[in-house]
Amino acid sequence: MNFDIEKFSYRLTVLLDENNMSQTQLAKKIGTSNVTICRYLTCERIPRLDVLTKIASVFKVSLDYLLGLSEDKASNNTREDPDLDIAISIGKLYCLENNSRLSKAQIELIKKLLLANKDFILSA
Picture 1: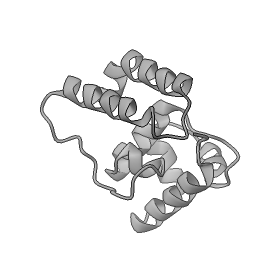
Picture 2: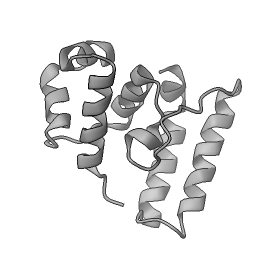
Picture 3: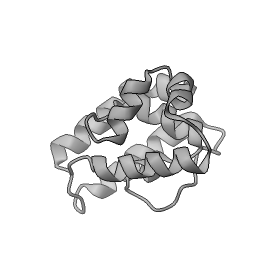
């Protein structure tokens, strides 16, 4: 699957509006620049996984929603075992293998990124 930057940009715009937050305010909250946020909104730049995680955390939405993979905004980070959250996310990726626009190589890369960045993701 190609990252749907237009859908991400639209959802980020809506979230900023719904939360009465400026690009500058979001940039400060996630530790980046206003220019970077502007580039996300104009589809000129694709955010890294760590940035996506921070944005989802600020707006209390799921990564799936932010990426356009789900219409459900709710973040499902209510479990007490963070390792279980990572395991469930990886399990969802396995379910995508036969039913996705993602290639198997892309899914494997996402799994590796999740595992390699587990501590960072869970601290966000």
